[in-house]
Amino acid sequence: MAHMSSTGMGALGPGQPRRLMRQRLRRRDEATAFAFVVPLVAIELALVVSPLLLAACYSLFRVDYFELTRFRGLGNYVTILTSPMVLNALGATLVFSAFSLVLTLGLGFALALRFERDTRSSVAMRAIVLVPYVISMLVGSLLLRWIYPRDGGLSSMALGSLGLGDYSILADPRAAMAALVSNAVWRDSAFAMILLLAGLKAIPAELHQAARVDGASAWLRFRRITLPLLRIPILITLVRLLIHFVNVLTFALILTGGGPNNATQTMGLAMYRIGFIDFKLGEANALAVLVFVFNVGLIACNLVLFRQRRGS
Amino acid sequence: MSPRAPAWRKRRRNRRVAGWLVDILIAAFALGPILWGLSTSFKPPQAILAYPPEFVPSQPTLEHYALLFRTGIHRFVLNSVIVSAISVALALALGSLAAYALARLSFRGRSTLMFGTVALMSIPLPSVLVPTFMLLANIDLTNSLIGLALLYTAYQLPIVVWMLYGYFRSLPIELEHAAMIDGCSRLRTLRKIVLPLSGPGLVAAGLFVLTFAWNDFVVAVVMVSTEEAKTLPVAIYGYLGFYGRDWGPLTAAAMLSIVPVIAVFIAFQRYFLSGMTGGGVKG
Image (tube, rainbow over all chains, first blue to last red; front, top):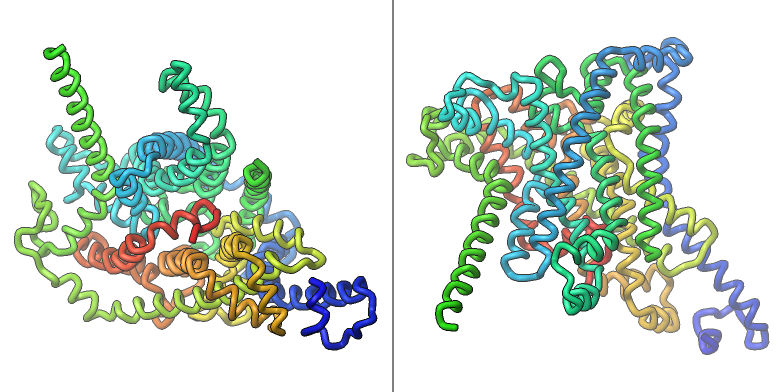
């Protein structure tokens, strides 16, 4: 670094101590750094952080066409928490998230194990199962919706050959929920697969080789090597899927429309309905704040896991 | 010895065939709904609801696509292209500045900023939609392609910064030192040395923003209601209400949305994966 004093730093005389020069350099770097990060900070504060703060503020008012007409205190929260629609949505979200989580994680794990090796067919299969994930969520749900209708849907033709021709999947609350879960599994298993695959790749191959030399069966190696070393990736996948499932709106909006009889109306959809169909923006903000507070817990888990993974 | 070998070999062959069958089943599960939609989009109306179903249309037709273009779907495609392009350009420009500062410069608040960036990566969109809509309505940025692109940039910047940060850190620092000795400012060093070396990182981050902006539905459906500013997914949602059970135009519109994505995905598969795991790309 010593030769740097001869160029670029014109203001510095040759006799000045190096400490001073370095200080000045650092100060200049700091100014540059601030200039470089200002756009990032500004746009995040303006478009992500400030809406969250505004939501907290708006949630205390009655809002009519963007005007805060009357201070309601916690009135909106009371309305929301006692609304049968919201409580119903909470139940639907729990059922949907629980089933989707278990099935997506299970299938994702199975796919990751099956396509772990970098053979040509594995790589191709990984790409194939990723297609439902990379296409638009809206289009994915729309295409599934075309599988399920009673008139002309593939599923009803299959049911028809079993003598269940009049059965309509999307009109039966339980079957509609199953259809909603199938949408989540169809789209997000590949996401779980990729996250778990990254974890599998990080396990040193020597461990498996050594265990094999010692005569450990495949099952034993899976239980004693793979599972323990995959703890963090599994937890990361779990938390990221859960954040997604608790909030997702598109699946229910497009595939089932929340029906029949609100049986598949999840929290994300309820929030959308209250805000943009019923236009009760004060209450919608209150619900947004509640959902966000719940999310903060999940995001905190995600951050802790993120740090652990980087540490290891 | 000789009678054993064929049995052993047979078992291996059986297992291989079973493996293929499982793979075919998995592929059918993943691609089935998409291929079925593709097939439907080429069928004449009377064949769409036919039983037994035709998997490959016997009389393929382009009438549904023609109908969509007659009714002006290209405007929505163009809107999506514009919004995606602006988002990618903004996110890469602002993202590489911030990522460079985080990777190479020491400044007060650096670790706080890193933490904030990671925290923002997992903010779920639906919970911010309502207040964001009210905010944008107040500053007159709803129904605007610029407003939409700004939102997409804001939502994707954290992951872009994170990916580029990892990539910049992996570059040899000596080249940058040499450039600065030659009198380059930090900005010039970034432009002339760092960015030209960061092709794969920029591609990976750019693809992430591109697919997000092209695919997004929830943000756009809330922020945009006029025909002039509708993006393709919002238009498709409109068709769902308009065409109802007329699956020909609906599946045709779906194909228009996903074919570009699948093409880009096949061409750049490697880069996608690095973004999903939030990790670095290997050049």
